[in-house]
Amino acid sequence: MGLSEDFDRGGRAVMDGLLHASRIYSYYERRLEAEILKYPLPGHIAIILDGNRRWARYNFLDTERGHQHGADTAEDLLNWIHDLGVRITTLYILSTENLERKDDELDNIYQLLNVKLNKLYTDERIHKRQMKIKAIGDRRRLPKDLQEILGKLEEATAEYNKMFLNIAIAYGGQRELVDAVKKIASMAKKGEIEVDDINEKTIEASLYTSHLPQASPDLILRTSGEKRLSGFLIWQSAYSELMFMDVFWPEFRKIDLMRAIRTYQRRVRRYGK
Image (tube, rainbow, N blue to C red; front, top):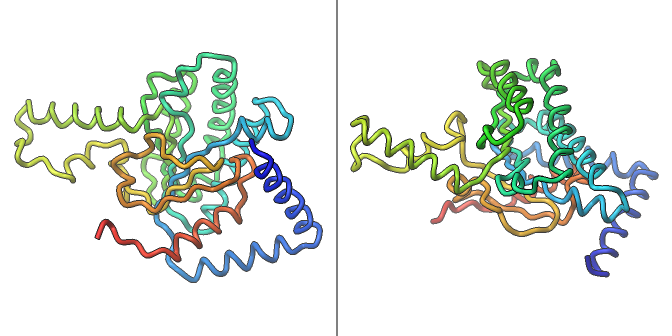
């Protein structure tokens, strides 16, 4: 981390403190929310939750604390998207590459996820909001207890369709495409589809996101300042608006989300035209 980045983050912390102390922060938040609600919101927002470890290191905390704060922020996010009226959210939690680490950090992440997912399972708000929850990825690579709670969440919310939360866990974009190809090849082998009839809709119907009313995100955010998608929603992101934010995930706030939405609203989407 360079000196200029240290200064930027330090300046951000000081400014946030001043804003909170003077009550300007809450005023600005209300004003920003009123502004973005005047215009169409993205129907589907996908977020790469990045920067837990670096946030912890910057704040002289252990990595476990970084993941804990990041998980708390993800929990807050569900309230923010509901307040704003965003219908579909996809969160990139763990990639297939993350699973190769095989260390204490990964075990801590598994334990934290187990706690948070069980808490979500007993949260009445998911039923009041009629939020359909689905894990996308190769859950067979996860510990049994995580597989079980993910299955329980999906079963309990299977009939809901007002809001959608997709948890990308043990997820890889290339793996998703390989699985889609295998599914289509099997259909062709059984004579269920002709090769010449395979098109974009056939592929989309074979992806992990086929259950969504809108599989392609309008807006994809990545925190921590990294400027890459890391294989996230390779097919679905073809025409998504991308935004890379210089804020670590644990310090992500509702105003950061709203600023991203405001930037999205000011862009002209061309869909490749």
